[in-house]
Length: 242
Image (tube, rainbow, N blue to C red; front, side):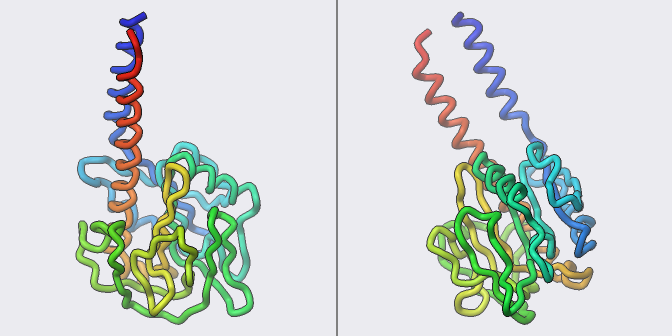
């Protein structure tokens, strides 16, 4: 029995440590078509291979096999709200189990803020005009989001989210109260809310350095979850009486 448990434990640790490929599911192609080609260039992060798979199916087939979900420009809202209750629940469950979701710019109108049933904590969509400046906060969770691998001086924003509830950690603001970038922990995973607008190739060209930083930041978060899990696994192993 002791030999079996030892082999099982070592095999599990080996398998976890060998998971060096990160799979990103990209929901895009219904509204904007410029993001995937850029994202595919970010295929190596600190020695980890990163692969991208695009879907335009808002039912999100294949989400269970992904580590990160990138929700592209306008895929949640663009003159209408596109997610049903099943998709909302699927996204929240994905994050709760350790997944990371990065939604970029979504359309809000004055009379119809973009809905947010895909998050566990309410957030308010807001209609804004284009800006390219933002202010980084002093939250420790900012980490190296704006410095690695690129020093970020500007990004292109438009409609975003405003006055987030307390569980959201503001990483950078646009104006006095709008989200440039914010972090929300849910279960074992995270939402990285990004207000950048990627409607066309020109927008994406401005945002390319920031998009790369977002992927790096997300993978670092994913690895922090894995390290926490391995720590718990080691602790549990230490309590096993052989």
